[in-house]
Image 1 (tube, rainbow, N blue to C red):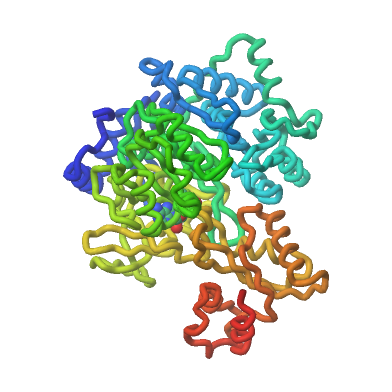
Image 2 (cartoon, protein in one colour):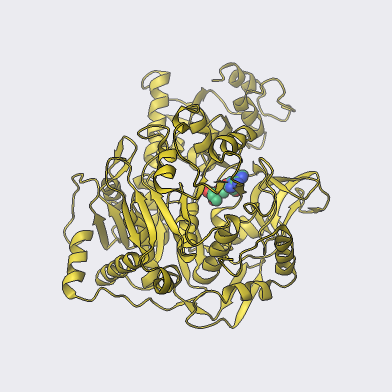
Length: 637
Ligand code: PRX
């Protein structure tokens, strides 16, 4: 057994789950003993969901980077911590042993310190998927600064909103990022964001794509120059800052049902224990594994299962800069073959898009090193599940369907590879420490099986969201006030006769496009920014590859250009305001929207029309003007 707390049998799973619910403090206290703390906790858990207030390992002190790096130096200093595969397969890959990673993280922690970054400061990181991104994240954690990574697909406006919300005075970025055939000018985007963020004191710029960038005196510095200064000073070591278990580790912005993204806050101690525990158990990882998670570190999956989970477990994390279809649709399979990957963790969207290329790109690739496959981010349809099972896992690799959220920090519901049974399209059973329940719309628990309901969690797990940055009330109303004394996930779920959960999707106004969360209100706000747009309503519709697509109904009063041009202008506006990831797939120009007499848009009707279900729209008699519905139906895209 590689990790003393690794579950090795189905009975072991049931026993662990039972114990964790009956005695959470005893259960997690024992697991936490296997980490390095500078001071032990006074109390394992203290909580109430009404405020909410959740404290794990309170009184304990640690630094997560000592658990992710330093403690492995005794036994595996020369083993790979991070392997990096570049976007262009002809470029050189890079590898960092745990010792080299230690050196790089300490060196960059010194750079941060020299540039004025202190414990508790918010540092925004906006980079492509290069090793320096992981190094920057870990260096922030080393100095006790709170990192806020922003995905490279967000616009200047989105960055500015996040910088202001977090009052982040420091930025780490690079000149540009390669993604497939594209070269994304990240520093330019930052420059645009900073026009309205004069409080930003320092921008550290890493050179990657060698795109020309503007460097503003007194504000912008080159990463490489700053490293040279540390080298000249001679001592690259950086003693890890002592953090309280409940000190914030990071902020990660995510979309909700309102227009403004929320800064989800995770703290040092509980997040570390939980991401490690779930990594080790769900994937049944071994210390010598090569773990390939294809997510971007800009999302929670990358935080938890590229950086903190795998490194705290001492495995090798494979980081890939590019996209699954560049230079061709065999790229993932080439990477698995090249590095003898043991665990592949990806999104259903990626699987579906690769399926569309047929089996040609898989042929001739040696995938025999694979032991476990995983999916995350959105429901996986059975067809994609079976394709993954047959053609990638060759029916020998268990597939873990892992359900979780930015707010949950780590996986909450999933089978454990080869330990508990899988069932296509089901996330199946909760992790130890997690007690899911279904409630009806009134908040009454539905206890039977073979039912659908709103998915809630009864008590905290160590990586529970602690707050939304700068606005605790928002955290309470969003997650803890819908149903009394429960964490509400925003998802619906079905529970079968065995008690297995199948996630049916969001029950709020949040879309899941290619596994990325986008609020309908956010997209509407962006569309409404376009001159000439009077009003808009955005809904999701089923999309073969993306899972969900974005369908926008827009009332447009402008007279500039034809309809097609107007659609393109609106798309460009959304791209400018949120980023390319939020571009609507379909924009239908309409003369009115179906509203009740009180002025509320009846989204149910719009959703049905977008889904193509135009015949059975239900009761439309409460509409102010029912004829609007016919107009919309008749001009449906
Ligand atoms: O709707 C659920 C869906 O993704 C949402 C969380 O999105 P985000 O915070 O961006 O985190 C994604 C990566 C953890 C959930 O509310 N979701 C996530 N995993 C699954 C899923 N839906 C179905 N099955 C899953 N395995």
